Structures are given as structure tokens and as C-alpha cells.
Image (tube, rainbow, N blue to C red; front, side):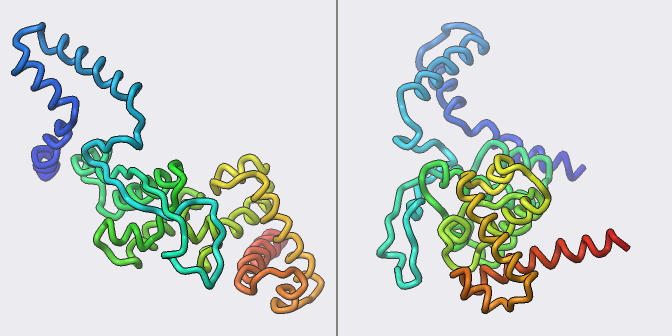
Length: 258
């Protein structure tokens, strides 16, 4: 019974599309030019032409919004303020057909929010921008803590690192991409697969692995974390993440050997 309620309440929203508006316009303004199937084919042809002649960045579809994101690829330093960094406009799909389908099928709200969070972060990255968790908190009208939970749980469940300033530009201490790259290396995943999982280039992955192996050799030689930081030039919190990975794998090896 409840499922029928959700289908009645949210199902009709699937028809709130540009295609529906065009279909109704043709039928009401141009008279009879064929049955519904003919009109639908006509609508599809027009939509195909729209997609061919207009680039996505030049118009916004229903359910989308324009937003300013940090430009990807720029260098970040601790003394640099947000107003001093380059921005780039991106188009974000805030409401997609799949979101309506999820409501119809009663997907738990948190699961839906995790999917939307991942989609927006990836859409921004594909357009040369990076959304922060603060950006998403503003868009969703929720707390930064809630967004952080969506991100971390999605990453844990799917074994990926979502693109955001903390993971792409080393802003703050969000360095899970380095930790995950080293973890994947320890699991003997090839560099190509490793790079795909963390959404970084193979060269970047090799760099993270080289840092991790340097930390590992010094740690196993008995050096303290602050000494490893001094010898490698890596920040202390980066060294700590590598050490956590090393200790985790060492513990697993010890348990398996018993």
C-alpha cells in the first residue's frame, strides 16, 4: 500500500521533461500530424538536433543549475585564500530522472544523497572544476558534517576517492587518495586499475606509491614519524596516513601467519 502511495506521489514527476513539453506543443499547436508514436519520433529527432548543435555548457536543462567551482589543476598553498583562486562555471544535475525513480522505489534518503553527491562531484571534475564539501552543503541545505558522511561512506562502499579540493589539490588533510593508492599497491593491483579507482593519472599514482615505499623502508628501519617526515620532506600527517596503511597490512600478515 505504501509503495503504491510513493508511485502515485512521485511517479508523475517523471513526465516533467523538455520532451513532454515539446510533445504537447506539437499536438496542440500544429494539429494532427500523426499518432502519438509519430509525434514522439518527431520530438526525438528535434532533441537529437539540439544535442548536436548546442554544447552542454551553453544551456541549462530542467533539473540542472550553474555553479562556480574551484578550477582544477591549480596549485594551492596554505596562505592562499579562496578569493585568490581561479573559479570555473559548471553545470550540475541537481535533479536527474534516476533521482525520481529512486523516490518511486523508496530508496532511503541517505542512499539517494550519497548517489547525488558522487554525481555532482564527478560532473564538476569532468568540466574542469572541483566542488568542496562546503559547496555541496550550500546546495543541499545541509550541514558540512552530513556531506562529509555521504562522501566517506560512498568512498568506503565503492572503494574509490571522489574528486574534491581535499583529494585533488591537497587542501586540508583530505589525503585519502594517497592512502588508497598505497593500499591498492599493497594489494598488488596494477597501476592502471589503481589510477582508475582513485580517479588520478598513472604518473600521480606512481608518485604516491614511491612516497609510500620510502616511508615504509624508513619506518621498518626504526625511524620515528617526525624523522621520516624530515628525511622525506613529506608533511607529518601524510607520513601518518602511510604508516597507518603499513601497520594495517602488517597486522593482517601477522594474523594470517598464526
